[in-house]
Image (cartoon, rainbow, N blue to C red):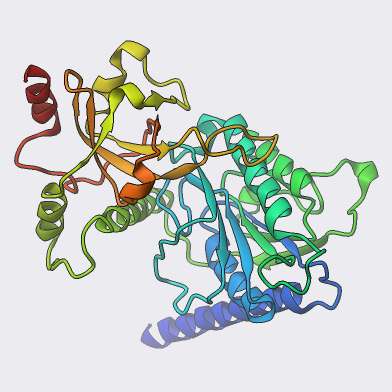
Length: 382
């Protein structure tokens, strides 16, 4: 029995090495194919938990080795790569990730706040964000008339998509592919054929043909855990990202040896005060009534933005988002919102928009000596 188990393990390791080589060869082909000028526009797609983010990182590292700068458009609001959950974001990367298993937070070039971790809540809004960021990329980063300027000449882009690939999700993916007209499409295939996206250039009408797009099919990451475990792991990763994000509110040298240290440190932060009379609440998903908006906002994570931010494209008129905040309390008589956020005070001076969200607060992160409801109620009585 032991020998058989060993042989099985060795066989599994062999398949994993083959899969790794396949991924590396696919990334090298996209990055170094002699026909990849102009720089490639790559869309990575496949079902959930197939390894899209892991392959995207490998591809980013490979492209950076050649082009030095690479754009990354993350459309997965539930499991984003470089931001907390709930964002659609555009990044420009100049350094390779040394450890592909680590969680990184990076400041995006531009981002929009979706306010939920489930893309199906508002597909139309999601698409407008993706199109807006892609238009911004084309306008600002995919120019060919300044080839002598490394910061303005064209750079490649990797677009990572979500694992929502059935029903309306497949229509959303098709719309993305039609809009960006990629040079390369990476399709990750699992052993469960029914979960995979269709083969070929499925997003094009039959008479359109492939239009020169390079279709690459690779094997998905193996040993996927059961569905319920995947959902639990996804929630944990979202919490870790949120905790890491709000950890930025504290000084880098703040001593943290346990979760209690972090909770107490954040609870002791002096909140930034926003004037209620200055704030416009933009409810992205029509989840609250206007008369209960401030009751709903107390104790929640919100997006913050400014009406002075210019629209990124004709496809999206929404203000782009500066970052996240946690509303510690609301003092309506005092015309004040008490907000905890790592966004700089200089930027906060221009904040006049709050986006409510459905993003769950990590358990215990904002525990305080007084509950949020108690604080808000006491402030109202002053």
